[in-house]
Structures are given as C-alpha cells and as structure tokens.
Amino acid sequence: MNTLKAEKRDMTTKAKKLRREGYVTGVIYGREMAESIPLKIEKPAVERILKTNGKGSQVMLEVDGQTYDALIKEIDFDTLKGQLLEIDFQALVSNEKVHSVAEIILLNHEAVQGGVIQQMLQEVSYKALPAALIDKIRVDVSSMKVGDTLKVEDLDIAKNPDIDLQTPLDAVIATVIEVHNAPAEDEGEEDTSEA
View 1 (cartoon, rainbow, N blue to C red):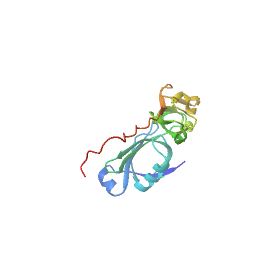
View 2 (view 1 turned 90 degrees about the vertical axis):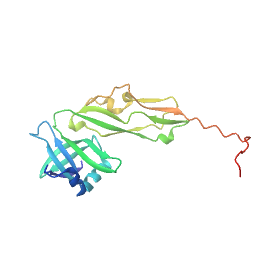
View 3 (view 1 turned 180 degrees about the vertical axis):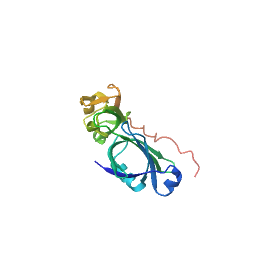
C-alpha cells in the first residue's frame, strides 16, 4: 500500500498561497478521530500517488508522525488550470464498513468483432470493510459481440460476499453497438466550385 506524507495545515495561511508554494490542501476525517485535521501535502508526492491511485483507493497517510489507514474520498481538480486543488481522506476503522467507489476499466475493447463498446457506467458504488476495499474493476470485453450488454450483476464484485453493492445490479455498464460505415460520397456529382 502506498504511503503519503502530509503536514497539519495552519488555517491562518490561505489555500491559494499554499498552492503557489507547491502544496495541495486537504483534510482527513473519521468516526474515531476527535476532529478532522486540515492538511497540506507536497504537490509532487500527491501527483506520484495519483498516477496509480484515485478516488476510492486506500493509502497510508502519515501526518506529523501518526499513520492513518485512509481512503481517498474526494479529489478536487481545476480542469481549466490543470491544477490539483484539494484531496480529502477518510480514516478507516478496521471493523466498520465504509462507502467507496470502484472505477470500471474495460480491457480489449479493440478485439470486439463488428461493433464498438459503448460504456455507460464509469464506476460502481459499494460498502465494505477496509480489508475488502477495491478501487478498480478490470473487465475483459474481447468476447462480447453486437447486441451484448454488460451489467453490474456480471461483475466479480457482485458475487463478493464481503461487498455490499449500492449501484443497482441491473445497471448497464456497457453495450456493443453495430458500426455503420458512413455512406461514400456520390462520385457523379459535379464540382460546382470555381477554380
């Protein structure tokens, strides 16, 4: 599991100033914590973690010498500026189920014959104990053909007794639609543009 070092943030310093200084702001909270802790984390460290982890990922968060088993709950990103603004964590309790999401990644969609995969659902929502948390669901769709539909109930996560799915089992993740080639331009048309 990845470890991320953070520092307690002095709330008298504005978030904008911290971002200019190369930090990402955030917070960690949890049921067994007396109060939430505002954080500042070095931007390169957060970017390294986010290359392999995302919302719903479990990380070890080290704050001023204390380590928390934490879940990445929210990532606030300014897409216009291409800037990571804030990242929020939930401290996990080993015997308590937590709400999380798992990203659905479709593999081998280029192998689908005669059709194109159309993905409608990007993630599933669920509750689980910290030991059963997952952040990514990889599905091989190479055997799918035109007209096939992949639903939440078809995923391995739906059969896992340690996970309580919150997304409906009949929710459609992806379907294979037929590819219609664009009609060729009529070659008999005269070119009316002036040379």
